[in-house]
Amino acid sequence: MIKLIGVLIIVIGFILKLDTIAVVLVAGITTGLVSGLDITEILSTLGNAFINTRYMSLFLVTLPVIGILERYGLKERAANIIKNIKSASAGRVIILYTLIRELAAALSLRLGGHVQFIRPLVLPMAQGAAELNYEDLGEEEIEIIKGYSAAAENYGNFFGQNVFIAAGGVLLIVGTLEELGIKVIPLDVAKASIPVAIIALIYAVIQNYLLDRRLNNRLKRR
Figure 1 (cartoon, one colour):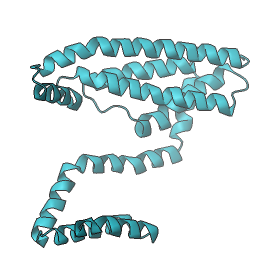
Figure 2 (cartoon, rainbow, N blue to C red; figure 1 turned 180 degrees about the vertical axis):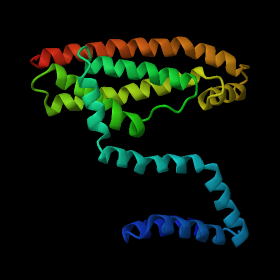
Figure 3 (cartoon, rainbow, N blue to C red; figure 1 turned 30 degrees about the vertical axis):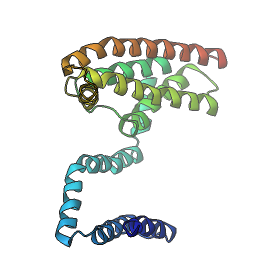
């Protein structure tokens, strides 16, 4: 029971609004000490955990970079670029991103993300295309475009990544099936993922084609 003191420390720390990292660190060290670990083992465990999750730290580094780019007009520039393309529409912009995202995921390229691409680039472009075509684009229509833009990221990433033979999802599937006594190799899983990825892309094309029709029916064209 005493080993749960770390949870109590975290709860108290959050209630008192203390520094989050300090609270978690104190909770971890305290839990280690009451569990019988010496300080060397605790520091070693913390160090290994930091190394194993360093990619998460790299992800956090990108957040202020995206914030700075947005502050200096990234979203506006993205919207202005798409407004110069007369044939652009919200649905076509999202379809193009879905295709690029799925191909990138299939090649294991870290090209995409809600924070890195959807918010600063894809959504402004899709919204800019809609503003190019319709006079009275309202808040409700903007929210709809946000939802479709976010869905494109999910489709491309989720259904494209398993096409890559060494993807984490592929290895997880292989490991799970082996535990169940089913022999399968990563190449088979990757090959089976290809038609699924194609179906997902076709679905995204149809869905975003219907998005354009939906906007067309709701709004007055310029």
